Structure formats: structure tokens, C-alpha cells
Length: 160
Image (tube, rainbow, N blue to C red; front, side, top):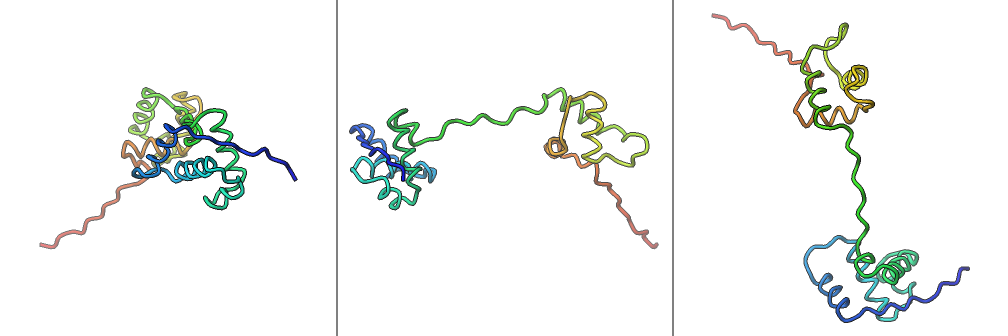
């Protein structure tokens, strides 16, 4: 069994007020509220295991919250780090060229454009270095294109 050092969390009055305001205030993400509850209970001198059972977190998670508070402060203990967003697949000019390609006739031997065909042709024509079908599908969806859907409207003859 691993021996853990006891967490002695002491929130200054200003930080306690901030945590209390957060808990009393409006809608907050659940993980922030649980972290705030864990910090207040650790401040009250409760053991990690007791805090973990009270707020329904694992003891490891409670220790992490306490350590983050000790090392990096209240904001980091309550909130996650910002995660970088997804990288941009292609720029505006590449998007325009792909849309223009879809607006033209499909390649020889193909009746219509499909998402897979658009992806293959975009790479073959060197519009983009590499692209997946899902990126093409989302691009076409944002431009309200559905080139794979044929419009076959059959109208009955009117009898006069």
C-alpha cells in the first residue's frame, strides 16, 4: 500500500469567498462544482478518502485537485487547461477550388460526384496535399451541396 502525505489545504478568505460564490452562483460545469466542493472539504480538514466518498470522486482525483491547488493556484485547481483546437484542414482558397470542382462535371466514366470521388480528385488535381472523406463531407454540407443525390422528378402527364 502506498503512503500518501496528508493534504493541508488552507484557502485564504478571498479564495474561500470566490469558491462560495461559485457554488452559490448560477449554472457551472459539474466538474468545476465537484472540484470546488472537494477543495472546501479539504480546507475543512477532512481526509482525502472522506472527501472522495462525499463528492463521489476517486481519492486519486481529490489528491490531484489538492496538488494542483498547492502547485498552481485556485484557477488551475478548478478549471481545466485550454486544449488546442483541431488544426485547419485546408484554407479558404482550397475550399473554393474544391467547391468549383464539384460544380463542374464529374470525371469521365462517372455519373455523378461522390464524397469519396471528390476526395480522390482533390488530391489527384493537387488542390490539397491530403484530405479525408469526412472533411469533404463537412465542407459540402456547409455549402449545402449534395452532388451524390440525383434529382429525378417524375411528373405524371395531365390528361386533357
